[in-house]
Image: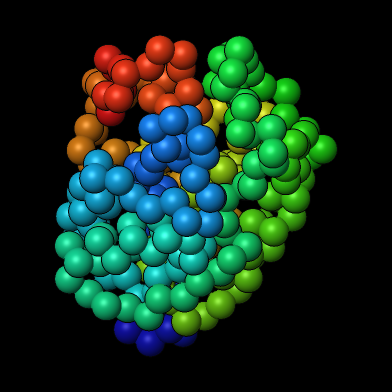
Length: 249
């Protein structure tokens, strides 16, 4: 049917595009002694690789024509493993502004005697001036992630986009899709390897279809910890064991 014969609603529907927004699979941010790895070098661990493959299987029917990552190894590995399951090789690009919020030097000792403060670092009383463990502010995160998202939305070279990023980055994108601010940011969880689906209309409006879906555990029966709680309990908790605590996936 010719475009001039379509109804206004049909034109809107035909112009709608889709973003599959993934968080990278699970990683180990701290070594066995509790010392942090360099953020730019953190790779997926074994569970993270499984989660990336599971995400790819869940997206096997998607018609992805562009892949965007932050360029950090954990997003590149997640994208590669997911695409192996999807069975397609669309063009892949890096947008460095979609990297994770960067912690400062206080991250090295963040969990020592401050378990609640560490666990709540992405949830409580966030403002644009709040620093993430003495590092980048949440305002700085917003000022690079949202323009990058807007630039992607303005492009005409994709219909279905696979965007593989990070917990903080994804929260910022989802907050914008929901029309919220940093209060919304703190109420969104992004479990490792999760899938979000955002539809984008030609007028720039968003329709959030799916959030924080974890293919390996759809109802999250064994996922009870937040991202920061998991990091603390598995890497920083005094007297911790090598294996994850009960209730963690």
